[in-house]
Image (cartoon, rainbow, N blue to C red; front, side, top):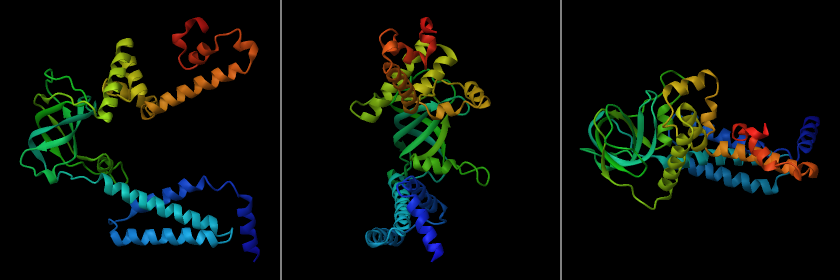
Length: 314
């Protein structure tokens, strides 16, 4: 009884502070799904749904001491079900052999490979002598050799002759599993070509995803026109997420200086960060009438994250 009272007192003291544990419990469920050595069958998912329903029903009649544990069980179950649902949603055919031959598809992403070559991600893929139900939904191809006959842009349907192979697993136990990442990105094959890439059809209009991607590339090009060289490529990468202009040397320098994480938080995250700093400083200064009426607080807020644009203020 003493242990029970102590546990009750501890939970009572944490009332209102247990919500941050919800994502932790969901992460445990997601991790449980990925630690399985087999793919759950329909019966397993039905059992998890039954557990979810029972825990949710018992929560209503359970006492205060049991409710946090039932809520944690619900969150763990939801995490497991979300992971399984996501895996089935993105499941697409994976190439089961090494392929060499004609490849046709629509460009949906452009970046650079580790060898500093332009790399295209294609959807609506066509492979000669491969049945449609066995053709990957997306493939990624590095462009080697001379490629002066095309200027890649999202929406272009291209054709080429190249090599493809299934995504490979980790090179060491516990290492990075590229095959898992490729699965959730619907990449069913990766490879390269040494032949020219040719245009098979012009870009299509109307698809929002490709329109947004094209806008990002337009912004990236504008940034690189204003800032030449490596500075422009880096600015475009952290602003729009487009890394196609960054050389391998630049990426290696960022890694050596422990700044490569800036690329991982590029685009939206950097925009949110700079926007937050700007708004916080501007509205903070606006709370001081003596400064707000006499100083250009908008420019001061902007100069806080880009002082080189406002040399007259620094």
